[in-house]
Length: 189
Image: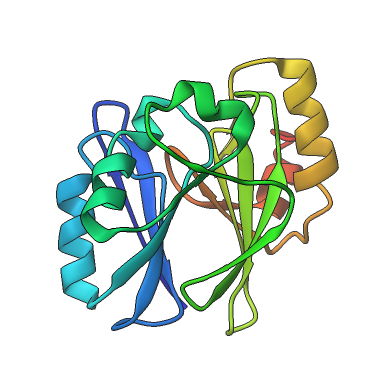
């Protein structure tokens, strides 16, 4: 599986391109502020064609390039309906289903707390690995801001049950694992 990630904009939000392999379809996760150029460069470098934009939540540092990217490529933007009022573009509603897109099966789990419509995306890689893209719900060594009681429930019910070796690709900062975060007690508060 191909995972390309980079930080963009003043808040250094992470944007990810996910694909079964180079030279084929991909999904773009959280193309935020100033992401259009780096996304275009990564698409060209890896010979990728975007089939959908997936948004972990509706804050501008994660969504600003979604509309132009979707328009340019004629692809849908997926967002949880609770965050639709935050985004001035047309989106498709995400629920708790799995999405089959770009040759990938992407699990979706609603994790309110940072925003009412925050979600995480889970994928199993063909190589046997596990990924979870957590947006601003969980970071390396920290958790998101927002309604801390609701966020704690989301972390406890959705992220803590994942296996220790699950790689966390957060909305800001470096990657981590569920096991590392559990040991550091970031998600156990």
